[in-house]
Length: 245
Image: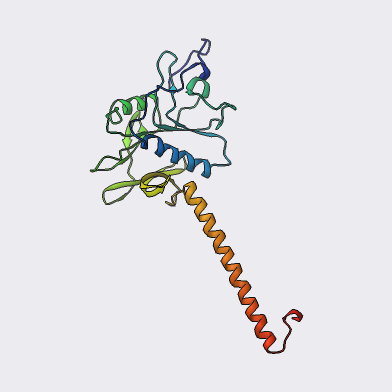
């Protein structure tokens, strides 16, 4: 992490551009991080000491432009900076490095496997996650951990030659890929997982499950009522008043 001269007048997040204004190359570069943030907002709803940024500038040097990963996760920081939210993530204000950065690869080479990887390692981000939805061979998901100032590829749960899920102990979550439906789109998506390997439900799935549980509870109540009515009729046929029992 870069050291700063705190006696110098450093620009604040409100004075710095909030991104590099570079448009995403495909919709997945926004939709995948959106899903990951939504899942965290549900899983960590009662926790206020984390922040998940999407296409937001991370300022690490007051004399250099920000870096803008597709997404990043920071722990031990305020979830909401103030009522206007964060315009950017400024390290000399936050005093916490993001623990994870994510890049979603597009058809255009943006240095995910080379220059960005080297820069993120130099800055000290503990985890670097690359998801390449267009890769047919090898793993579409690669999760690196910083060891002795260099990234090492982590092994995860593998099926049919593909890395599907990797546990991140410092975060307390796993990250992985599997087919599902989000925003009405059935495809391979990226999810968070519990230590037991259970995938966190999307907002749509959570609502659907709640509706199913409510319907099941209603059906059970109706069945119980029908059984009670049947029993009452049988008692009456025997000359017994069920209201007196």
